[in-house]
Image 1 (tube, rainbow, N blue to C red):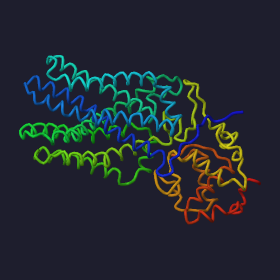
Image 2 (cartoon, helix red, strand yellow; image 1 turned 45 degrees about the horizontal axis):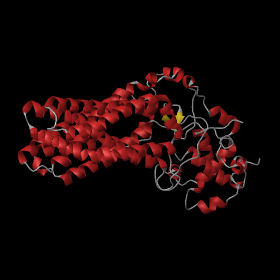
Image 3 (tube, rainbow, N blue to C red; image 1 turned 90 degrees about the vertical axis):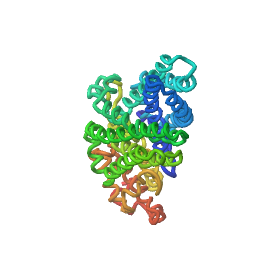
Image 4 (tube, rainbow, N blue to C red; image 1 turned 45 degrees about the vertical axis):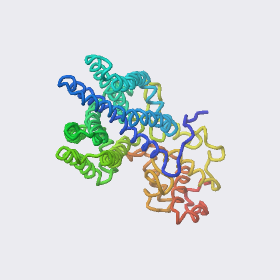
Length: 466
């Protein structure tokens, strides 16, 4: 008998599994991007230190590097595995798709990361203990290895939006999947913003410098780096948006909030103003204020950007063939993958799942609400919270509507046809569509007791027993 290879669903009822992944990932972006930008910035400072005979620049490298050992490398090494763990249980098929396509690419990234971790210790603790040329070479290798990790990860993130070339769907191959128009646009944009983060976080260390003249010099270097990077990032963002697939453009126009563009401009303007102020008045920079600015960048800059990027690739989670709810949406002959939509149409969604209890495989008057809950967990919970709080609460999209027939009609139009571009194509049969509509209607807290106790007579024309 044919079954869908779907794993049991991990669902966190408070805020939703998607937000847990998003929170961990967003914090990790702050740590990782700061580390990469700092590695290249250190190579620049080391070059300046040796050319101009400014040993105080090497001292700043040591202090900023020691700070990064905790901020980026310890905390980053915690949140990194946190991403792996949370995404593996929240989106096992999405992770599987990435590993099967890029396992050796990821192995290469880990080699670069090992060099990076060793390099940060060497650049800090070998100051004055090796000759200048050796230390400078270590600084440059450290910067290149760090940037190498970013290049590889961006290629994989770009594939999650859409494969690099159409040939990938036919032939497979990581080169076809890895290098696309979006890859280098995203790399350029993130490169700019990583320097912005490096400059913001660097202010925490620079603000504690006691020597007024040296503090002014370092603060102005960070400010100039931050202003240039912020402006460049805003301009490169436009390039990035122009490389997105048509589906992402439709989602951006219809699903992102109207204030998103304005908030992005306001955030970038605020960051630029911050750097301008610290350039004009370096004495105003303190560790406390710089720490507050770092949190502001995380909350008002990184979080909305990461949420928007995740939204723009819907309804897919990887390669435009794995839906966010883990169903395989299209054939990929190069990888021997077949779409599961025909199986769902032929057998139904509930009977096709391995881990659904036998009592829920066929919808009847006694299990409709429970079957609807099971369907919501599998088809909806990766993108929508089933509680009033959390990520995109499902009930909110129906405005408290308890008309089961109306909800069912919408579901069959949105999910059953695949015509709603940001929703997966899941062809539920009449009984399953009714069960899911019944559960969604029950999410209205005021109507929950009434709907839960109601009989299928509320919609007699779609009674599963008919």
